[in-house]
Length: 225
Ligand code: 5RP
Image 1: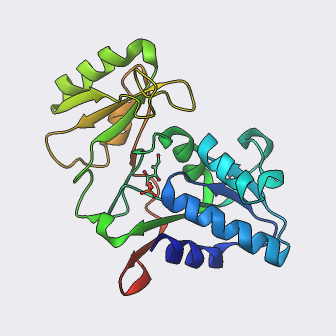
Image 2: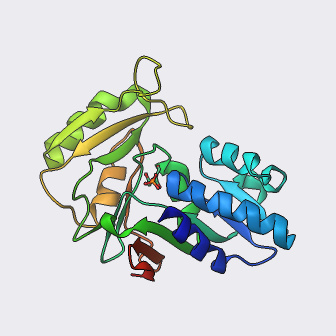
């Protein structure tokens, strides 16, 4: 299904575009498909990755020479990303893979944001099944966790590395992630409310791209939300 979504996403690509590469397995399927298209069609693209992982993938499929740091591009035509949960009102929950900060920087700046997701990720409101990832400055992590629990309820857990390295998960920005399980679904205003806590870098609540194009896939094929 990820390959079907990736193939459909190629229809949004134009020669000369600056493209934001999302992170995660669905974004990687898109990067692979883009690698094939770019070499077949001789496309000239500029690519901005939202994680070191996506950068490595782009290099692996022959797109390394098109990668640029964000500060070297003036604008982003298209960003293609995945999501952990997609609400019908186009609020997204992201960050299970820990790339939420760079994803939000790129996704929010793109002229067109394309979100690719398996239809099982469609939920009435976020979060439905996953905790909300909150990237925090390590210095502040315990105080942020306590503030979030006191203000909004629920439970915060420091994300621990699952890579074999002992200790907290470290993001590409050198920060920690707190996974917050709130008492119930959240309104879109929680995005700004969480960011108002000193020490919070950003969160996996993406409530400000209601104009995003969302492609869903199930056994019937790919369709727009
Ligand atoms: C990473 C993300 C990913 O987009 C999200 O976790 C979806 O990943 P996948 O496509 O592997 O299901 O936000 O930080």
